[in-house]
Amino acid sequence: MKKIMFTLITGLMAVVLAACGGNEESKEAKNDDKAKTEETDQQKELQKQMDEMQKKLEAQQIDEKKTVAIVNDKEILGSDYNSALAYTQGQMQQMGQDPTSKEAAEQVKKQTIDSLVGQTLLLQEADKKNYKVSEADINKQLDEIKKQFKTEKEFEAALKKSGMEMKTLETQIADDIKFKQYVEKEVPAAKITDEEIQKTYDQYAEQGKSTGQEVPKLEEVKPQIEQSLQQQKQQQKLAQQVEELKKNAKIDIKI
Image (cartoon, rainbow, N blue to C red; front, side, top):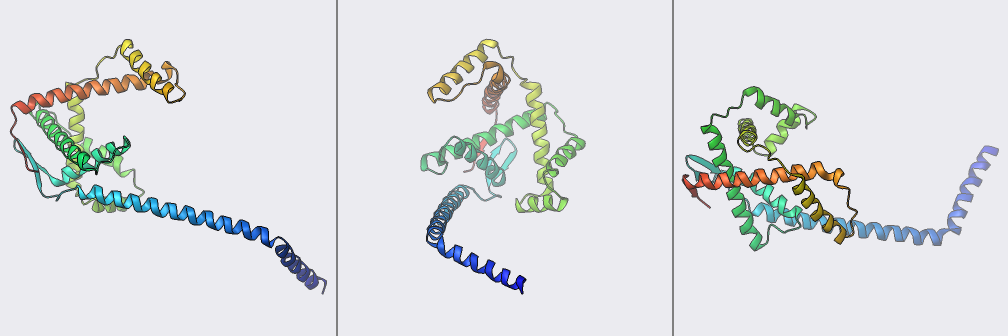
């Protein structure tokens, strides 16, 4: 009997307390609901904008089997173009630019084709100089890619979703390894002077101060600056090589 009474009293106390604070809690609940609704609406709007942007980006793609260009005897297909296109689009977005505007779309298209033509010419040059990729090297790189997935089935599902066959992936891996070999041998990392590093750091520090950002000490960012300058010089040399190779190449752009 005491147990039953205790339960009833406890329940009654809860009802009374809820009634006493009802107005305040009701207001807070309404405010919380309103905030959640506004947050949900914002998320929906953001998702809508992202979906619309994705549609615009995909609209720039072309038929995967379409021939984009022929470089000497090498045919570049739409599948290659679409992969390079996505990379170029991503770079522009990282810089805060809209790759889907009319002016940018032409720039993206030209940049993508130039990139593909340049890569093809350099790979052809690597073949002429007998750069080889072993099956062991390909399998090693393939294993690294597979490690990003929990199971073999997940990897196979992702590969299927991308529309890529295993043979195509292995070819791309081989080309990637061969390209890196060529760059390391033919365009080794340039020596960067302390003066170049200091000049770049000063420019970086000036920009940081103008925007009110805290600028780290030179010693803290020196390795990154040196690596960045080396990459810039490599890219410049590769661009020069591409221009030289173009002089004797037969290039037919189809789009």
